Image 1 (tube, rainbow, N blue to C red):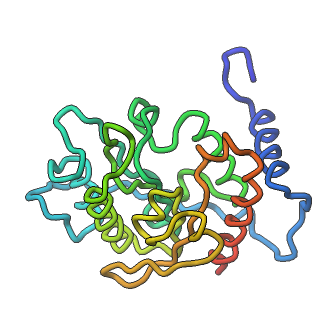
Image 2 (image 1 turned 180 degrees about the horizontal axis):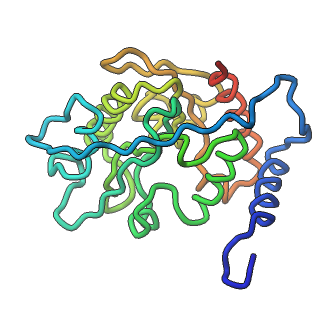
Image 3 (image 1 turned 180 degrees about the vertical axis):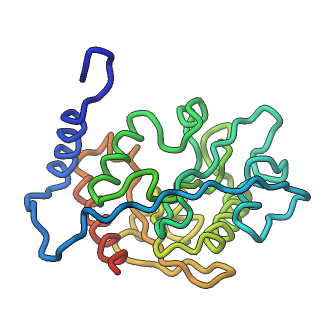
Length: 239
């Protein structure tokens, strides 16, 4: 860390190596060649849109604006902060968490703080960054107790399936037990370790459930399970 309190490149590299070490990675080479010099695709900024009515729109740009403004969403209130999707919807990898944490609401981004730093290391371990994935939540609003009730979970799951159908990613990575139950119909312990076909209006989307960064912070030994899931993701994402 430098004198201004910022992390240097060396600090970042050391942090990434710690993530790999905790996950049980002990091999630095892969059998398959990878074009590390291929430039990453720049994220496309959404066009300005106008949202009318309370039904979820059928175009992604309109839908994202609807998420940011509609009073029809579960947990919507005039002063309630919304943490909207970020990243590149054309990246081919969509990651879905359950709802913003209190820290996320204050920061204005999903998976922030210490969980966010671990999340960034997880992405780096598979050659990704926040700019090369599309990150969203079942609900862009936080419930008063940070949990879903049954009706809200069903409503948010329907919106998430609609969202995934508009994005049409090659793979959807689902973080956590609440999102797994809402979308896959199984708790995380039963859902992780295998691929699922998530039905959407645009056809099925390949979905994988894994442990969220917030859990891994408290249970470092579980990083090996998360790394195994990320390996499955890497295999699925190969051209």
